[in-house]
Each structure stands twice: as structure tokens, then as C-alpha cells.
Image 1 (cartoon, rainbow, N blue to C red):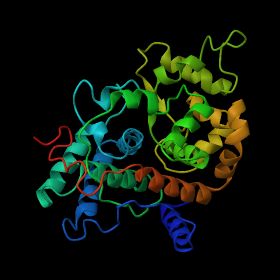
Image 2: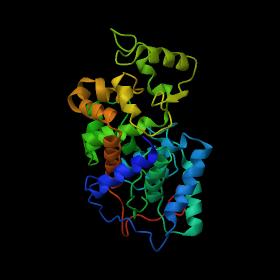
Image 3: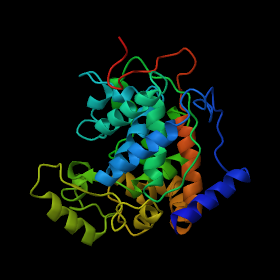
Image 4: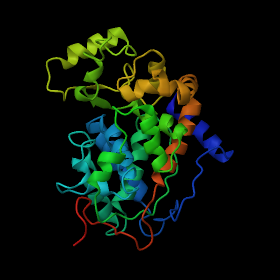
Length: 327
């Protein structure tokens, strides 16, 4: 399906009342309408330039927003430097990226509207355009978040879903921030773009269990390809999360799961694990057959995620530099 028709379908669902449902807290669509009216176009242009320079950056920016919101809420705390910062937590170390792009966006925004737009909102807006420029749907982003004053490395270590987690554990982590099983599956669909390092899936390729060398839920041909790719490296070699549809935001990720071609254990587990069969398999099948249903649910889940415990009003601050709190 072409990107334009995706936009029209999701827009139709929003108008009909099937779109994002959110309490909105104190966020609004027009928060910057007077104080920084061009903020969306500024972020849009910066994200477009970054993706033109490196296609993978779309997935990286989307992931930054995800990993930010799951720890302390959507407060930009993942951007803070320091050895005790979230970016150095185990799920993020040598993994989350795109900080320099966020710096560039912040610089451009500050030039137009000094001290006005939070880093947390920049992440939310950048995530939208990362999806749009990958051929995915658009949505209206609620803004008005403030930036947190502290990072939470221990929270990142314990609260971020891991590719090694069971589906039940992942669902528990989603539930802890107010998201449900539909959100688990829909947001996992973000893996339709991006790449993963061998260290995150090599456990599936050899010595998997006492009865099977290779994960039996992994397609044999794909397993052989991955073993060849990863056998000579240090674990940091990367491959596409969505085999044969690397950089296009579509429902191909779910079609791969039906064919045992999910890269990460947590991906394939949505369809093949005992827990997944009981809770998430049916929705994987639905999304594999309906691009429209996936895109609509994905938009809904993105809005819900973006509304996790935002700081508003006089809480927190608007950071001048996304990497450090204001002096």
C-alpha cells in the first residue's frame, strides 16, 4: 500500500472515532502555536536530512522515544549524559543511538524559539517523522512535555523490555506503564524498520537447548544465513530486523513471524511461544493480513506511549542542551 493511502485510511479512522484514545493529561496539540509555531516543520526538516544521510536513523529516533517513555515517563531523561545515565544502562549501552541528530534538531529549534521547546517533545515529534519518512502513517502529536531533571539508570535496567524477555515479562513491563497487550504487538511492529546486533539473537543460532542446536522457531535457511553473518564478528555486526523489507514501514514484519523469520526471540515469541500463542498470536495474524489495522493500532499505541507520565506546567524544565540539566 502506498504511503498516501495509509494517511487517508488512518485519518478516516481518526475522524470516525476509532483513533487514539488518551487522557492527554495537560498536553495539547497547539501548545507551541504562539510560542514556537514552526517547531513541527523545523523538526521535520532535520529528521528528513538525518534519514537522507543514514536510512537507519529513522528506527534509531523512533527507538529513542520508546526507551525514553518507558523510564520516568516521556521526559527526555534518556538524553542526559553521565555514567549514571539511562543511555549507559544495559538495554541501551552500545545500542541506542541518534543523540547527535537530537542535538542538531535542538540547535535548530533553539535558533527559532530559544528556551521554549523541550527535548522530550523533540523526541516525540521526531519519532512521528521517522515513521512518516519510512512510508508509515502520520498522526497529530500532543506536546507540552517538560524535561526531567534526573536520569534513572536502574529503572532502565529493570523496566525496559528485552529481546531475551518472555512475552509475559514484556507484557508485564508494558502494563507497568499503562499499556496493554495490543500495545505490545502494535509497538513491536516498529521492528519493521531498523537493525539489530548479532549479540541480541546469536543465542538462537547454536547451543540453543539440550535438544536443539538452533531455535526450532527460527527458519532453517535464515538461521544458516545469520550464523554465517555472525560467526566471525564480535557480536556488533548488524542485520535487518524485518528480513526482505528493511527500511519500509509496513506489516511485513508480522508476515515474517508467520514464516518463522522473526529475528529476535521476543519478536518470534509473539507468534510461536506458548505465552504468545495464548495472548498475542491472533493479533499477529490480524496485522499480517491487514496493513490498515496495524497502522491504526500503531498510531493509537504511539499516542498512548507518548502520554506516559509527562512532566507539565512547572514540573521539570525546558533544557537548553538536551544532554545536561540547566545550570
